[in-house]
Image (tube, rainbow, N blue to C red; front, side, top):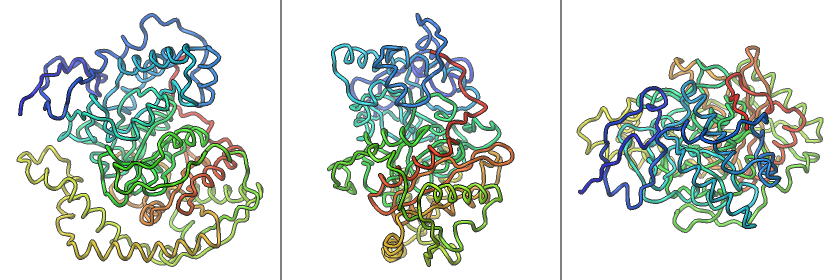
Length: 524
């Protein structure tokens, strides 16, 4: 296959920000690059700061605030983008939130969006809003590594559907964010690109696998971003970074062009600083896509419409022998207080029983599905690759375990899932939503054992398993000042209700407004 040389100095990567720029030439496959490859900025500081007067205004605290500033001409899309690129330049060496920063491309986008506003074309609330994409969303002409050494030079020739839709809504993409290799894990560690760090405590995990998106939002490096969630990869970084993230109903957001972890469990969704921000981002992401086989057809829905409707009359379930089982004391206290707050706001909080959750927790069927599908996705390339060191030990272990799952076991697990979905349908006849902790602990040290991270999945895997939506929202802090998250779960297609409940709680508490100790000092 013919190849094309791409000068690595035109790409701004993690390595560039940690030390001297890599000035050697890198060969990439022309078949991956396609025609018209867009080259990234040679230096972030050169793109972000040239010819910009420093102002005394802080960066916007929300998408709505940024949108107001743009329309009031307090600043331009380009000025806003330059400010966020300076923020990335300031904190990337400490957080390692990005794998690739697309500085020049972002500025080019921003200038086009400024021209549109001057011409009277307004794409809506996301016009000119700087966001980030997890590095498993295909981006045309920009490398998409999936957090792996194996794909370190992979350059897609088309955007993922979500990337296209968000660009049509007017966002400015600042770059591709850090993730666990092939989305295999929730730690935010990565042997090839280094570990991402939590802006609330740099020694701790930012959560994963959407680690960079979570850390970047919490540190003020962008106004929102995309993640993906197989068994918690949106909800974990939301909880441990004191931001909000929603896992939509399975099939509600297209996964075309999003590198899969497990076909029948994966979803794509947004993370943001507030419920309102997440609602606006989700609005741009949803919609039927005939190119994605599991895409759902659903009527148009305005996710922002009911955010101020309150929770009076909403029935919220607390799952017996599950919601507070094996959780740290500070987490239990915060979620108990959150339920009291919801009750004061007018919700009815009642106990419910779900047989699959009230007894011993057992996830073998879920893991049989995940490992079988992961082996189907990546196994052929792994087995065909002579240098197995291009794959990390967790990924290699997942593939080897997946090889041992028979088609018979896989089909049996699918049948078991269908039966257990019926349990949830019955529960949602009794209540409108369920509340649990997002995780049983606050963010652990990056050096914590695998068992520590495995413990964190107990409140997320069951809802991934049955494909229902859930949202993670800040609900307090532990004695060390580390964030605690609450998860609200609803029936299929009830994202608007989850956003409504979360917004009512958020407005009554404002935990989300507290900023991390490591936060940008850049001003407009």
